[in-house]
Amino acid sequence: MKKGNEEERFGIEQLFGSKTRSRLLQLFLKQPDEKFFVRELTRKIDAQLNSVRRELNNLVELGVVEVIDSTEKGEKSDRKKYYQVNKHFTLFDELRLLFTKATILIQQDLVKSVIEGQPVQALILSGTFVGTSKSETDMLIVGSPEPKALQERITEFETALGREINYTVMPTDEYLYRRDISDRFLASIMDNDNVVIHNTL
Image (cartoon, rainbow, N blue to C red):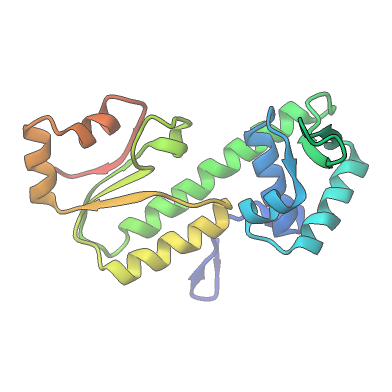
């Protein structure tokens, strides 16, 4: 879809009407067994404290998120209120599927943005993009993209995804050399789950 001369990019917040709410849901649904306290959530999704509290109250009222009181060991008086996704919520599975598909759409936009108009010979997604922590980077970009333009594009999609993207830029000749000598860094990417999005080498 286009609006004027600009291509519209997919944003899950367009469906939920709130960036904070969509980022909270994305975090909770991606880590359904994890518990978070409010200030931790504000750091993880880079949102204002009042906004996070407001959206948490909304999600708790809807039954999507539940409140858990936890007592710290050794500090009986220090009671903290934690929040966790309610895995018994009627639409839990449907929401997880929705956010998984939304993330794929965002990733497709990211790939187009990184490659478009830039001398990129290969782009490989790994790490958090494929649900593994074994890889040393989330994205390997082979080529010589303009650093400032690339950083701006990456920053834009870090905001859309609600998390940091750990990416590596490698000149083509260095990539070919490392590949030929079975470099450990490249092996950590290629020997684990990865998705080759673009490759002209």
